Image 1 (cartoon, rainbow, N blue to C red):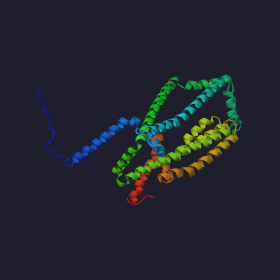
Image 2: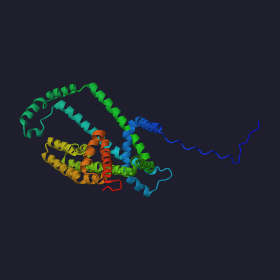
Image 3: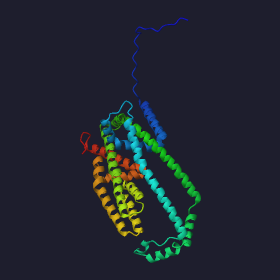
Image 4: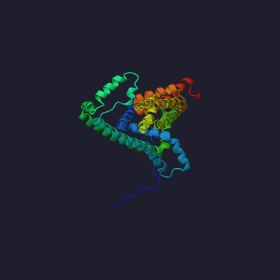
Length: 376
């Protein structure tokens, strides 16, 4: 069979493509409806992983200045894997190591609690020293304690009632639910680390795309809104997380020297509670109460006074400067954003609430002051 060679010379010039017809009202509506439908479908597909993605974005924003310093020290190579991998590993260790330490400490405390429970069943529970120092009702409480808990028979009857009030099937169901939640949280944490790695690697391109989308959505002020939201996340991380960890560390040292029981667990609980406004007093109040129950009134007073001083300095001097300076918001609006965000989004609301408030206030200021006027 004879093969036909394709022509090698310049053929006839191809006709230029006709420009697309102008969009009519129906076609524009259909295009918008298609975009909205695809966006809703994408959110529906991703909704189990949206909290993990948001956490990854928050962590990337908080650690981005560190990433930029490392890149200036050693520019990324062709594949850009070194710094993203090291930063992601550091985040994993910073989160996992304290959790492991607290879990080990909790397991030890659980063993002590079981041993104490068995001791009560065998020997009874003697009247604690603090009962005699109660300002009201000390004699009545002491008499009831001696009649019901001080001897093994009374303690066993009370503990038997407690055991009967706890349904075995409910404990099994709680154990299964708790185990499934642990597995689910571990999967989300792994996905957060994976997303964080890619954000560290492809962050500049994603940031440019985000700024471009903000300009398209909000016009000339879009980039300022995006940068203000990023700044609010930085301020919230510094003002809530870092200050909360500092409060937990300082008060944990106070717990150790004051002889408060379980200082490691109480210090970790204080650090977590201090990240939420008005949460630290609950934690160090519990520590002071435990110290008082053990009979050390002086230690309880020291813990209460130290807690009040630390939280007063943190809440009235440190946090307003860190959060308000970054978000350009009065601290009242920052507080409302934090509390409303926690109510609406849980722990994520600590960061989303101030960011949303900062964006809304910036848009309001620019709308009322004019597009070209610089916002103070």
